[in-house]
Length: 423
Ligand code: PA5
Image 1: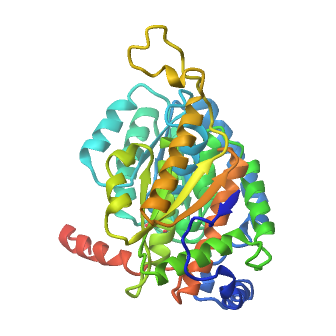
Image 2: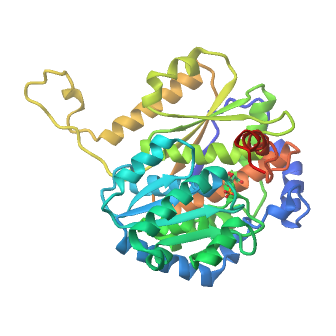
Image 3: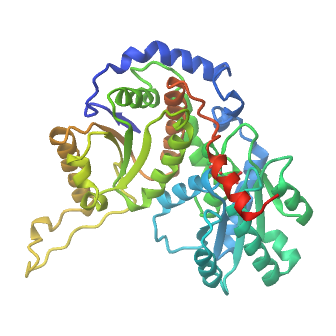
């Protein structure tokens, strides 16, 4: 993974933050930082439960071999990581089994009904994921699909097909899973939802999709090693953390996360939760937004180029795409496209990227932070998520905010429960 901030149009020197970065780094590792009861993710790539990891691989293999459909029932941190990983690594139309369907992440009756119809006649497994066990969206979908599975297969077979990922000791879902005899996997106490993709939360669906989770964890471990030295000359995660603060000091309070692959749109959704929920507190924080290029250049490009100068971009690219295609020649050339004959479509995409960066930076004066990954494989994915975890924690702690709580999320829930008549 590489980070290039030569086009970020920074008005401050990144290295001038070294002393503060050292202090925050120290506070993360001596456990004195804000939110220190939720920093289990820091050493998780080494400290993860090896026995549970083996069980994750086993259940992943079982689902991969037996399911036509895996329903992943969860919301926010309980599903975005898995979805971002699976889509990035397998693309949007992998065409193999199991088909992975995400539910429990909203309250649309139409969506639920369409899934029920779509899974008819297929072999279905269900992984319900909720740390609290009381999230309304997840609980509504879970009850509907649990009853569907019990009715279709009977209670005993349902016990094999329903897998619960939840708190190790308490909560409604934990109690339910105990009573029903479902296989259970743990969301560690000291890891919050948005930092949990490399626990059972993300790893069961990812393994079920046939992805090598050993490689994913190796990528996380490599990133951990690479970001152990807080030296801002070398540590790209901390460079990115500092650049965000510098851009904010320049009055840029929107960060636009840019990808050039539709299969990486969910990476942007995962990233938005990570940074939005970690940073947006106490009236502070950079608003995380996202676009997929070149698609959105035809809708949002105008604003980025010439609109209010409130934003900067973080552009995530792949050196090597999952697959490429050579643009064919056509003797009639009626579409006047023969100038591209023999070129690869990925090369065209990369030229579009270069041209866009030049337009936004040189003409539009919109700073661009460039992040590149060698490929879309599990090692790169693991490396990238750990990069963003460390960068996020550092960046938010530099702002003086606790990156690991989300008190504001509760307000809508309270209002909704009142309207729904929940006691
Ligand atoms: O990051 C978070 O903490 C949230 O996004 C939660 O993961 C989300 O609200 C789902 O919560 P739960 O896993 O308790 O159902």
